Length: 166
Image 1 (spheres, rainbow, N blue to C red):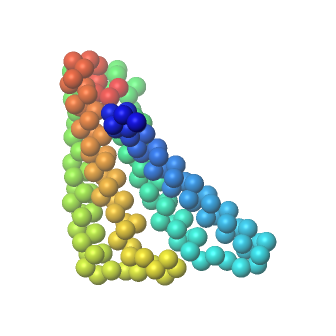
Image 2 (cartoon, rainbow, N blue to C red):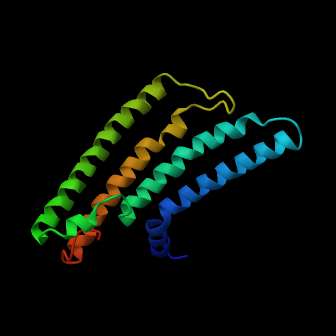
Image 3 (cartoon, helix red, strand yellow):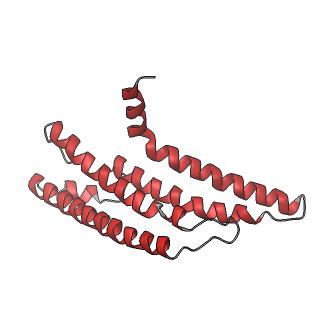
């Protein structure tokens, strides 16, 4: 398989793959827990914990997908009623705030991960360090930051037609 095709596939489907895998894990954990409790009269302790670890991964990957596809809540009807110059200012200002928030979350997410690394907390059922599931915070905000910058790079390359990512 051509490396360029693989990279293009990952660029266009990365978030969906991780979000779908996380949702499948959650579904399988919940279904197996229901079957084990009601059919076999015992609970599988680690399924609840694994589903709890997979949930933030699904949510944060969905948020990164929202940035890539520009699906996050924006009031474009109101923005589009403004003159074009004001539309640019509002969109740029909103994206600049979003960019700053991503950088803030990456910085404090790294601080949080350092704390988890220095003082490991072991999950009770799966006996793994909480550090690993919590890495999604930094991964997701870095991915959102990357996707936001990617929107503007693409917008500039395409001749700055319309609003960025719209």
